[in-house]
Length: 154
Image 1 (cartoon, rainbow, N blue to C red):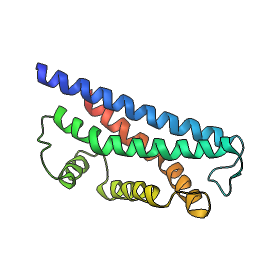
Image 2: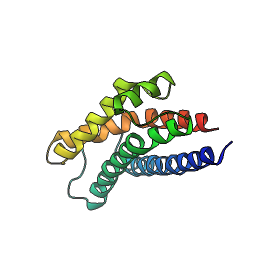
Image 3: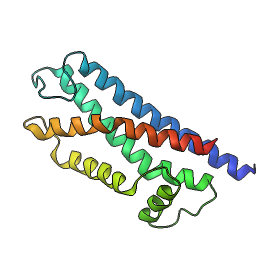
Image 4: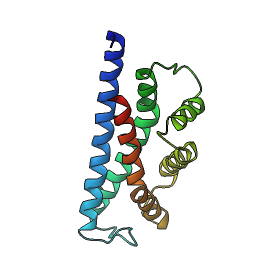
């Protein structure tokens, strides 16, 4: 393994570690919410600052996870695999789909959810609960993607 490939592997490992940390923090926040509420959420006590902080943590960590994977992890994986990453993001996603890492359609759904968060997240209505529930429903898929990347790096 050349020194360039070792550098790419180390970078990939660092970004993967960061991604798993975001995922762990997401799971921890859901675990704490689940002590008081059943998941998926049907309601939340908007006057309880701790509950709101957990929901904010979920939103923050989901956004960070999705951004880290989309902006850094996927490119790092392709660099490690010896591929050109100076191409449109859709081409990168298509290549990752060919490698059985992700589904392009599913990734765009995650991106749409991320965009929805930045425009509509608030607990004054049901949209906030819906966003939290969608994140909860997709946790396993994020973990599967990260584990696929992890296997490819070995």
